[in-house]
Structures are given as structure tokens and as C-alpha cells.
Amino acid sequence: MEKIIMVRVGELFLKGNNRKYFVTLLDKNILAALNGLEFRFHSTQNRMYVEKYEEDDEGEILRRLQCVFGVSSLSPAWKVESDFEKIRMLCDEISPKKGQFRVTVNRADKRIQKKSMEIAADIGGYMLSKSPERKVNLFTYDFDVNVDMREDGFSYVFYEKIVASGGLPVGCGGNGMLLLSGGIDSPVAAYCMAKRGVKIYAVHFHSFPYTSELAKEKVINLAKILVPYCGEIELSVVPFTDIQYAIKENCPIEYMITIMRRFMMKISQKLAESKNCGAILTGESLGQVASQTMESIQVTNSVVTLPVFRPLIGMDKTEIIEIARKIGTFDTSILPYEDCCTVFLPKNPVIKPSIEKAVEYENRIPNGAELIENAIRNVEVLQIR
Ligand code: ATP
Ligand code: MG
Image 1 (cartoon, helix red, strand yellow):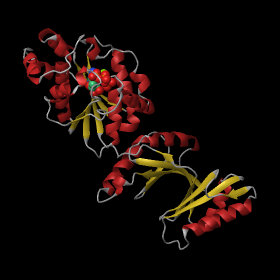
Image 2 (image 1 turned 60 degrees about the horizontal axis):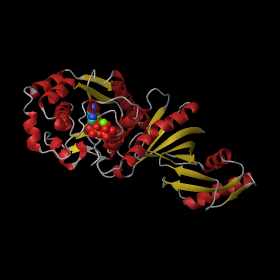
Image 3 (image 1 turned 30 degrees about the vertical axis):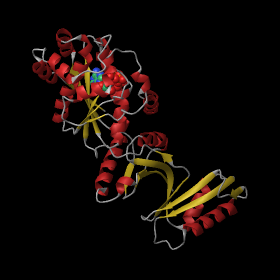
Image 4 (image 1 turned 180 degrees about the horizontal axis):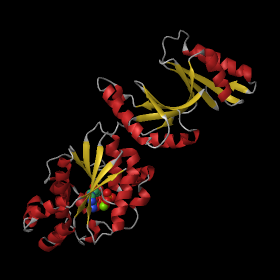
């Protein structure tokens, strides 16, 4: 008998003609997630199996697969030929010798004539005969012996279903350019969009020397923490200091953040287009700060033509933090390195900016287009694996 890990996929996206496309993509993502480990992988229409792995790696494989979007649940299982004698013996051998239990049979292999209930009763009876300290109880039980009889002629026996991330396989939802700061919100936004199948590209605006190398390292570390969920991330680090100087010198201080955001959006759109991204993604949440009022969002949004997705727009900070903790980005996000916005932060930023004023002030910067071109030319591109 052989120990394997059974991988179940979300039911929703398996419907219709896209099934093959989704499954192939998910297979690819699973293989990437398990990179570096010893195993064999076997994929069928609605189940995948990780086989022939080192016993010690089981926990690690489960942990990694739990992060892969498109996987709905996982079960470590024993694999045996769909032969009643063999199944009975296996169930007896691997189950605790005492306690209340039940047997649950799923007969996906319709070539088998016996009904699931009869098979379960047969296995249960055998297990009782082998150990008098076992008791059958269908409602209150210490262990549930699940026997999944598949079409491939093998049965899989397992006790637990570990809930995984759900969602859609990363890549099926197109590419998105995420504005990744070092804060709490944008990494959570990455997680939310990857969950809907979006492949994440990231851009970070860096204000060297006002923000330190440590601040950049922090963003790189955040991207690394996201890799198990998002897959490999290409991170573009944009030098932003010259633009910030130009704004500070030419525009009223209360519009500093508004205009900075407009520059960020313009640059992000250009990078997005160059990477074939169909959307820009941000970690904005309505009303969280002055730059995230409806008016501010309208003013910053008006410089781009790509759709901007803000998956956190209706979430409270506490809800965002809950996800940040779950995915493991929180502790890194709260490290106290200044980000480019805090360095040039005005005391009283405008809460309800107008597009007309923003454009007027922005036009006071004599070489805006050139500054954008320069910033893009000097982007540092990092592959985060
Ligand atoms: P976060 O926790 O994501 O930093 P925040 O609450 O600090 O968000 P803001 O600073 O207003 O909010 O930023 C709003 C959004 O703008 C961020 O979620 C992010 O998408 C983007 N952003 C802000 N600063 C940067 C930066 N330096 N580089 C890239 N994107 C940024
Ligand atoms: Mg921030």
C-alpha cells in the first residue's frame, strides 16, 4: 500500500469547455509550488495525486498545496486496488484499534455493482470483527474511514479533508499590475486578486535616499511571502525621488499626495501595458486616508484608461489585518521603515481634490513627461521566486 496526497479542485470552474484549460493551468501551478521536492504527480479530470514522496515531506507538501489557488481541499490517503479484500484489510490495518467510527464510501467507479452503503457495511463489519474495542456510530465518531473508489480502478482511503485556498488557478484571470507599497494593504490586495486567478506583476515606488535600502528589502520580502499564493512575481522598483522633488517644488503642498498618486498611476499604466496587464491593482480602501476618499480616487483614477481593481475598497482595516495575518504578511508590513509617501507627507492633505486643480498644478511641473520617461528607463526589475 502506498501513501499519497489527494488534491481536489474547486467544482465551479470545472464546468464547461474550459475544464481542460483550467486543469492544465492548475497542474502547472501545483508543479511549480512543489518545486525542489521529490514526488510524482498524476492528474485526472477532477482529482490530482501527489505520489512517491518522502514521508518526511508530507507536511511540507500539504502546506504548500494549501496555498495554491484552485485547490479546494487535500487529503493524505492510502492507495489500494479497488479489490474488496484488499480494501477491508487496509482499512483495518491503518485505523485505530479502538473507538467509535463510521465508514463512508464514495463509489465514483460505476462498474462496481455493490451500492456504497453495502460496501461501507461490509468494511465496517470486517473492522469490528478484527477489533472488539471498535464500535460503529454513524453520528458521533472518533474517526471516519473514507473510501473513495475512483474510475481508475484504485481506491483511496483517508480520514481528513484539509481545507485549501479555493479560488481560481493563478493565470486564468489575466495579468494585473499591483502597486505594492510596504504597508499592510497592498499585499492583501495581491492575495485577493491572485485568488481570482490574476497573475501578479508588482510595481514599487522607491524614494532613495529618503527611503532606505531596508524599505526596499521589506517590499521584496513581502513579495516573497506572497509567492506561495501568487507564484513568481516580477517586481519593478521605480526611482521616484526626482518626481517627488518636482512636485514639492512646483505644486501646493496640500496637493502633494494627490499629484504623486497621479504620477504613480501614469507610470503603473505604462508598465502594465508593457507587461500585457489588463488591470491596475491597488490596496485602497474607501475613506481610510485622505487620498482614498471618493474624490481623491476619482482624481487619481482619471489619468489611466486601464480598469483599476481595488479589492479592499469595502473592507475595514481589521478585516484587512485578519487576512494579512492569515497569509503571513502582517509582521513584515508593520516593520517601521518609512515609505515614499510618509517622507513627503503634508500636514493637511486635500481631502476633496478637484481634477481641474490637480491638472493645473501638475502642469506647473515643466518636465513631467520627461520625468516619467526617466523613471521608467531606470526601473530595476527583480524576479521574486
Ligand atoms: P498600504 O498598506 O498598502 O501601504 P496604505 O494604507 O498605506 O496602503 P496609501 O499609502 O494611501 O495607503 O496607499 C494606497 C495604495 O497605493 C497602496 O495600497 C498601494 O497600492 C499604493 N501605494 C502607495 N505607496 C506606494 C509605493 N511606494 N509603491 C507602490 N504602490 C504604492
Ligand atoms: Mg502605504
